[in-house]
Length: 401
Length: 229
Image (cartoon, rainbow over all chains, first blue to last red; front, side, top):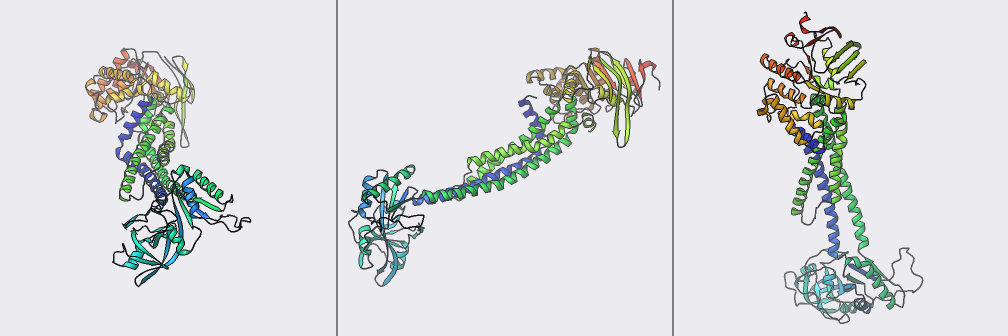
């Protein structure tokens, strides 16, 4: 039989027992649906985490003073590391073309008060660009104004927790607060962001970086956050920043420049493995569906014994008979595969609709693998019944009615 | 031209050896009209299966058109069946999900005849058996006689040289049976070797030659008139 004839003939045979075919198809369909949906979930989780990191800025470089030695042994030369100064921060912004924004960060803890209410709060000294670099957003009022790095100003932006604790229902805008010994005027309130990179951004007071350093009598910055223009350039930017700072520090490499990528790729690997595991579990149901195909094909062979005998009498060689039944099994599994694909994609779309945060879309490799396994199991599990059909003795087969 | 010599077919049923055919020698020239008769269990079906290359003898020789086929491998045997032999069965053996035309096309489908030619030849074969208007009917929409006529069309569509009919009227009423016999005899007049297995003496008596089997042996081979019992 020529291939198109074979397909057509097998198709009429599959249609010959509709309910049985439909049930088998459903079995394969459920298997493929499971693979598509579960891998979509896993992939969704991976993308979700990636995006959370992106929300912090995957283009982020973090400069910290001192050299972090993984060996745990303090550097022998250089003694105490040089301060990470505002001039260093300025130099980075001026001389590193791959850097888009920087936000120097001074951190301290101070007692913050308004009238009789006081609260111990983390105080961040930074610049206007912190808003963009850390993807913060302002609820009411405005963020720090753009100032020269070295100029302080008696203005502060407070987190929503601070607002609630100090001002209750009062409008904080324009009100004076005490931070340590200094006075600041509240110009804005952050909208809630929750914890990010270990700091509860709802419970902070942000002041201009020079004011912050003066407040805590610091000569060194705590961190410099750097936003790189493009993600692919992040490693080049890291080396650039390191070179600039090393040059400024008398050719001693006494700062550490970290990327977020290292952390992110670890997460990626873990969640990728999770997706693979979920896909594997779903594949088990697919192999069960393969057994269903085998069962149905065995029934078909015994039911159509006399037809097989007839085909032999009409000149069909054993190979030809085997191909007919293999084609039937493959048709069943392929149709089930496509059904499962359709349902799986629909399910993923529904999931994405109701859980927009979880971008559930099945990875292509999983879809390809599911279809391949479905088609393959049809072939594999079809072999036994097909061979049984091919080996039937024509005389015995014909005597069955 | 069929030449059987010393053909024997034994098979094992449980611990008993059944000698279905013993030392059968027979020559059937092209275009002959032969009836194989005998009581049930006499080996006539076994003989038909051997003639139709559906079965292989335990020993002996079967030469078909000068070629020894008794020892051919299954694949070659299938090809011989497809090209040289047409079968008509007592229970029609039509494929229920295929139309009359589809059933007639089946041997051509298996024989890799191109689709266009298949349709043309199937229509022609159905016309020959007077069923052109039933081409699109499924077997369950046809009467017994019509079904057997579809089977005859299917058996002859590959233009075989031998037509084997196993009790072709056994499942039909008298009138339909006679129509089928007339149809088969027409095919025989057109040059086909016709071999009919039957226990119906009336049908047997119409053949040019009757071979009578008892217990796996030929007890009579000759003109039907001479047959007793």
